[in-house]
Length: 178
Image 1: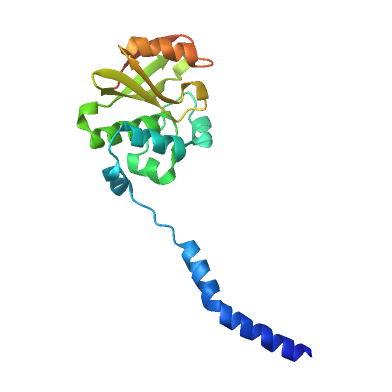
Image 2 (image 1 turned 180 degrees about the vertical axis):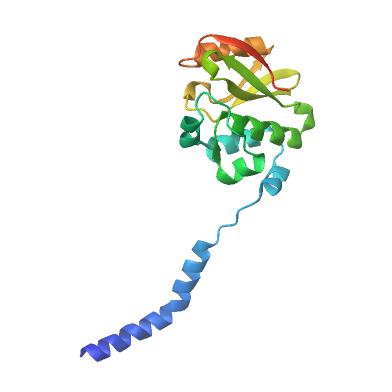
């Protein structure tokens, strides 16, 4: 078989397979991404937020380092959802807004822990069946990441935080952000 015949056979194979190749490339390239509004409208409880935070959200380490010791301009819940990353303040705002959309009875609020040296920490509190829970994401300290509770008060959470945070052992105050 000469090289011309070989090239002709190869060209015919490619032509026959091209619809399949095109379909595979096209189908693999389509990823349906739901918007924040559409996704949240399907969520039924804080557990859905927790699952998304655990599975899809990640710490934006570069942002964390860039704004260490200061409060950066917070991201909107839509931006945090789209980027699937952020730091403590982004995660707290995302959780607060999302929880209150899912179920206003959660009464989700931003909580600030005032830590010496200006390195304050922000989390989201919510109430479920009359008990206080804290949602804490967007931090590199794995010992405090997650949903914690129930607690009787913010002071009880403060004790938990000081016990489990690797460096912040003396929180000066804890309060709701207004």
